[in-house]
Image (cartoon, rainbow, N blue to C red; front, side, top):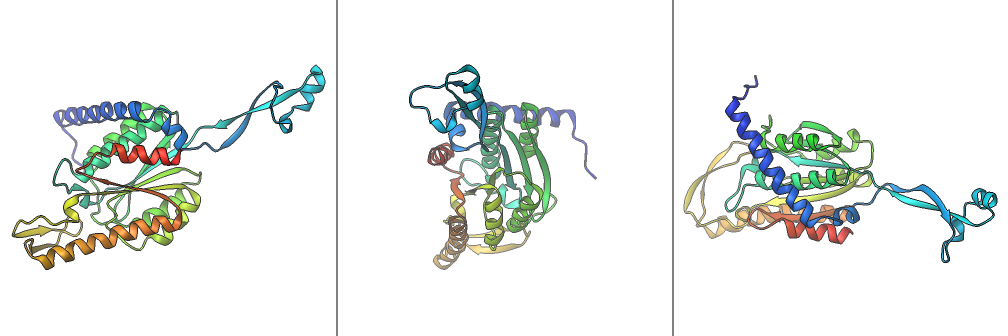
Length: 295
């Protein structure tokens, strides 16, 4: 049974949503004016109007009916069909609560997703969200408007998943079946999962897919803290770990690198774009570089 929030809790939630919106809107306006438009292309070109022929115009676009009527050459003018659909496909598994320096992975995911959602709304595009763990937790269909974007931000801040684990393959399979229209899909996860390359290829053939790998440096380089009791947030398992052991550090790092390389190779093979963002480093330059490369 879901417990109803108190007025104080709701007030604090709205304040958090507003803070995230203000920060994300500033980032979107300052860094991505024009870049978002050039990074994500529209569906194609559509006829807009006719105008008198000018020197250098392509004769293939002459509008013969209008030309005959007015006895001077006119050409067709086309414009890009701009409206896009952006889907934020967000891993909400328990491992996202981890973070050792500036912020947790969940906080970084929230800010990054908010920037993308606000950028889409500013450019009059639809935006939707899929929250997944070991199952599809919630599907927010794509719509336009500030209130819709604020709903997505509120969900990101306040959402409590039912499941703890991660199934990236299942989430990719879902979007291939459930979202019929070709969309720009940001798959945002810490990618602590394997065996999703087949589903990734299928989704990338249907959608314009971009992988966003979120991780904390301590997930790769184990801090030297002696003998500590560690808990796996996705399984709930606890174990004692000697973080001073060279062998333990090497095994820990090797496990992380194996999943990181799988992510890199899977996206490279399918031709989908990807980016990596650390919790202790600014995400804006990385996002800026992705937009610039696509543009």
